[in-house]
Image 1 (cartoon, rainbow, N blue to C red):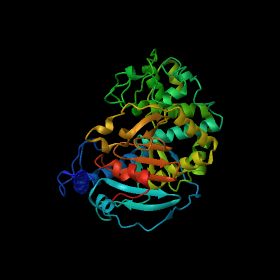
Image 2 (cartoon, rainbow, N blue to C red):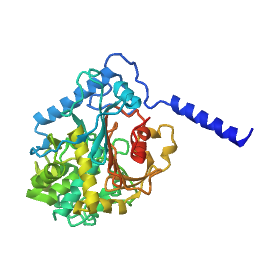
Image 3 (cartoon, rainbow, N blue to C red):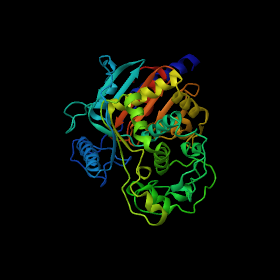
Image 4 (cartoon, one colour):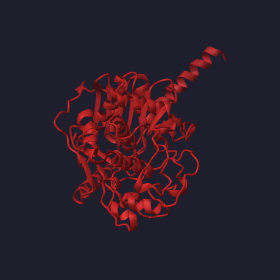
Length: 426
């Protein structure tokens, strides 16, 4: 067979395979009743929920936030009325996105290109028991880690923290492995704390079976007393981001509220309240008792935000970077100090497409960098549980933001390729 014929056959087969390839995994028991998979407000990542179950967990999320509000366990930054509506084009016809929003797991899809929202997609009207709108709050999950890092950048630029190389000197943590470490090692998830945290459930510290957010940080400092840093290898975990969040509170002191307003009101210009979940107050004894209820024991990276405010924060990061502000220089420093990410090569796995971090080669300051096929470009990635993601192209002013019910859709198709080529999925 001639080379021309072989090439043509391969092209046809690739085309046919691409057309048959599913962009999202099918729902389990489509049209069936709602299923309680967990006592909590978030689905496990291996679940392929039907619409009734997605509706149930939307309700669980909203009820969880309201319960934390009634318990006094929300820290909230209110908008101050300076939000600027995004310029928006009429959504172009796109069967792939329309299908996903009609029967898939992405609940909100925003594609921003050079100052304009080119596609503003929400789960189809009437599909769920609550329609997705611009006031619905979503969890940030681990995207909140990146937002916390952005707040660190502002704390440095306001003079509360000297630099990312600052050695931590924190009385509440003086007898723990974090004392004396450079902040950079915490930001890069290289704090040498693997021996202190349950590797499978990284919300558990020192053998405790309480979620770390159900204890004040001073209580956890008590559990960590006498621990030492062990090495500097990458150990990605959830507790460490809350340590960083509370370090900012400690360093900013009485100016913490001003700092948070500067980030969300003045920089991002949020349109709706942005909150994070506070740690539960727990009594401690001895020297740590004096920190009971102190703000430096309560902060977390677990934010609750609307879909458009996700985009506003992403745009603020992009503008800081492009305008080379002080915070923009911090973000550039994040790239320079990024280190090898532990999942290099995971993009070869069959389910790799479900997580954008599988295509990142570096991690730094709580962001993903150096994506496969775009390693020479300035792309910042954030990834939150079950698809609360932001991908920011600093060179071409492109952003894709997703809010999702489940980890069951192709991040290459809906995010990475769109950022790479500036074209919506076929």
